[in-house]
Length: 196
Image (tube, rainbow, N blue to C red; front, top):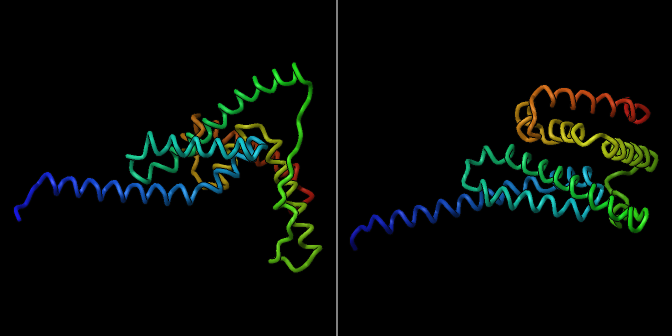
């Protein structure tokens, strides 16, 4: 059989596409839970958070799937934060109209999974303290202004450095430092009863 360079190039290209698809799938699997949690904290709505994360993932794959894997993290967080800001803009208009026509219709939804006890914890009093502390942290994160929330979550939860966080938030490194510092101060102030 004769060597056909066109067939060889097509085979290499197909292998490369499969490797890229597997790599991006692994990246998205690794980041999806943290991204979802960030979106839930930002929106206080599980359904909207899921849509935001899905939209960010689709944008990453379609627009930047051909980039090197080391660039996906900062790109994904920038897309995610941009999508959250877009959600805030749309929600402000939507909620203003809803309030005008129907009055205040806000209702909190409960997640049935929150009702189950964690079998890993054996001491009820310790479990109660930890649950109260986590609820206080969750409430404190929800109370932060959006930019402070973004800076804190990207720096602490995602482990991005100042430069990567600035790229994800589309702002200067000085702004990141300011927002992060204010977030830490606000959280310490609100959570002093729960953590030393």
